[in-house]
Length: 300
Image (cartoon, rainbow, N blue to C red; front, side, top):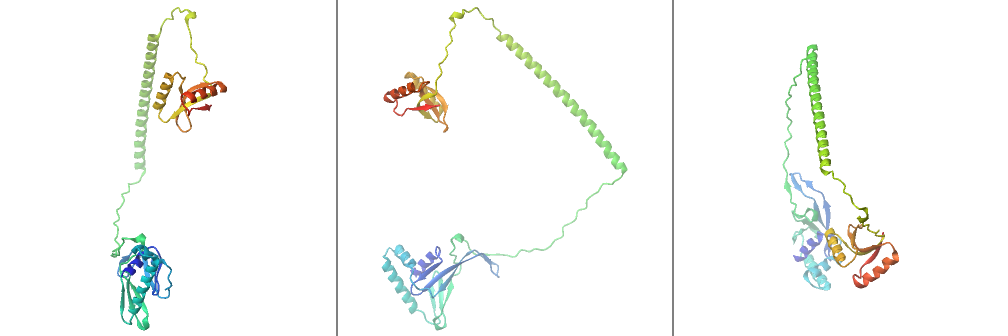
């Protein structure tokens, strides 16, 4: 029956689903268990039936209305008619099928006994798990064979033999260590001597004579200090892009350069830098009017 299928669908999410006028289906979670016959049952939810809960709570009616695309009132009327047909079929000794949930057995005096369907697991966390038949493990004790340990004979002669071998090993080891040390010192000294000879030859080849030069014709160009007021033209993540921007501004006549990276790792390009703030503001106004409206003043 379709109503029981809707009830099973709701039992995956809710612990209690009431069939108005008939009773309520209630679930109770249980852990994994091993039955006496060795069957391992995964964790799930067991379904029970309570005849005392018959008042409509709206859950089943709302679900049925949404699933079948009908109004809530029509869904509620459909459920009431379904419950009335179930009650009419309750006769002592009869069985009432409510698949896929299970079936009802009508006892004496109209008492209902609900039997849940086998292999029905309504726990979403255990979805797809089935019962497994386990087999007992044979834990027979077995004796581990004992392997005897060979012990060397003790005595004064053995002790002196080991002492002699140790002294010989120490003597050979000391001689070898001394020989390796002397070889490394000689190699190091030869390396220093070769480096010194190479340095002397290089200095001789680079030696030149200073010609007579008139000091009056020597001129030195000293760049004026840039100043702390910078007119920023942009900031670039890639340094090559910042370099190309500097070249473009220099072609236009600006004293452009990269002043480093800001705290965000961007390379900052400036039109020019000034020592005087009023002079920087005047130049900024001209740049915004002619070149870039987004230019701004940075003070470092």
